[in-house]
Image (cartoon, rainbow, N blue to C red):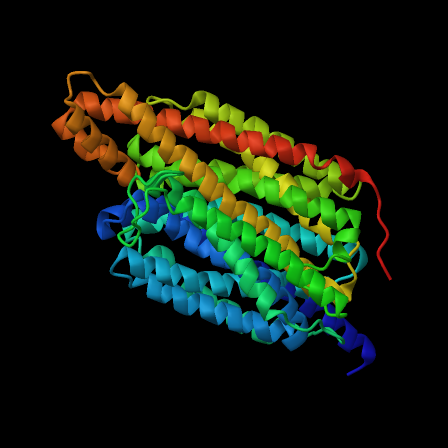
Length: 524
């Protein structure tokens, strides 16, 4: 075999490897959204509360975010292909356990393990791309990777709706078994092994502190409406103080964050790298891009929690019908991916990102403006189509913009950092917008219930609707049509507020792109 044949084969393997990596990313991104449509069925089957609904999402996203930095660095050390295989295997095994879960606690626990697998997969795929492709080809590879995230985030609800309605919500997790086995075969055959020549040493203390920071912050945001933000409303059994445990949880967040920063500074004084490398943040494109990624993810993923619940519980859509409405988002994302391929090389990436975020804001404003108890499906689809176009534009170019000036030898750590920024944003989005949704639902419902309903009964209705994440509304129709209508109106109002809040976060993200137009130099 000539050297030309060997080079041609290696070239083909690179692009087949990109296809396999895109499938691996699809596995974890679809799974992060597929659950949203299945949530009402899970609530009915496992009798989970609205707080557990948030934890079904957050347990996955939180562990995902907390471990990304660690595994991004580990990929450079042990081998990117090897770690990717381990990550996919963990994810598939956890998916099977989730499909067989018999309680909310078991499902949440399996989602935690899924988060470990996802935290291995995502930064490792980016590190593989950064090490495998160079120049213009690297830009194409990043665009394909980013477009996969944007498109698959919307395909998940459609697939989840079809599986839930015609089979069971358990297949929303069980489908990962055949897909995961296919991906493992592909990785073994076409993904090339690579590792850094001088990888950074691991930092287990920094990793532990980062987990405490993210975990306590998200825990406080989710459980605050249950335990009370200052005074104890419904504290856990072991809590005997008048003050709620939430202020103490946020205090832990602050202490752990200070400890994380101090520990990193101490390691750097000893000549050791820290979890977050300050020299990478000296690169303007990397620093600014991560800030934008965090804020944009906060707005993007938070709204995906509320829309499926509103469509099914307030408007009466089935799981498949909900997925079909959300398909408009996927169509917009895929259209944007094709358009980016056409003019992406002629237009600076930062302007493509700005256009994407602006379209996302417009789409959410449209969605929020049309939300009502009698909203037709096409009105929601129009806003979601515009929103999906924005997701496609922003996501396809943002990753390449963040990593464009990062040295290849630091690709694992840099990929882990930018992925962490996205996932922290996603976790905060689900926590903040979920809290906005359920808090607003409770307050609006209490105001809208007819005065003829006794106070004790009103409290029971509010607790039932909020506690079930709206799944109690159809059953309420049989007992009191007026109360059910009030609940649908309250859910619509809360979802509208959630959409406008997400648009507000995206507006902040758009403003944060201003410094990204400046070119930076890659450090030696």
